[in-house]
Amino acid sequence: MREQVRQRAADRCEYCQMPQAQTQLPHEVDHIRSLKHQGATSLENLCWACALCNGFKGSDIATYVPETTELTRLFNPRLDHWHSHFAWKNGVLLPSTVIAAATIALLRMNSDRRVSHRQLLIKCGLFPDPQNRQTSQRTSPE
Ligand SMILES: [Zn+2]
Image (tube, rainbow, N blue to C red; front, top):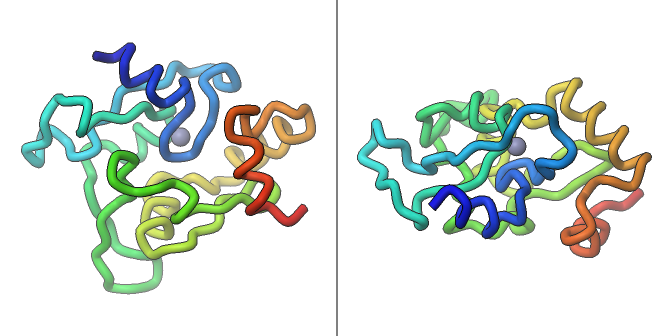
């Protein structure tokens, strides 16, 4: 099942889109709805996540949108279309929805270190990965 999840995601984090080949830590299987919250171990509830996204997400399924009291569910790679929620601008993830804003904040997807890493990969032509480059460039006015 792990291999099916990895292949379905093209070995790319389904939250931040980082390809496994461009990170040191191995990507992991994430329970989108965690076991703690009665999530199933099934393909419909699993996604492929980098160690950073998965580590910051933990068993969380929702969080407060920054600077509000609005409790919001996290991005669900099985239900939500990535490009409907996120866009790139020079290695920084821009939220198009409150779900994305909540997810970016909780998973610390725009930490200085992560943005610098992406910017370096962009300079080297390694990010976003070629499979996703066409749609990503369309949303990235650089
Ligand atoms: Zn990630």
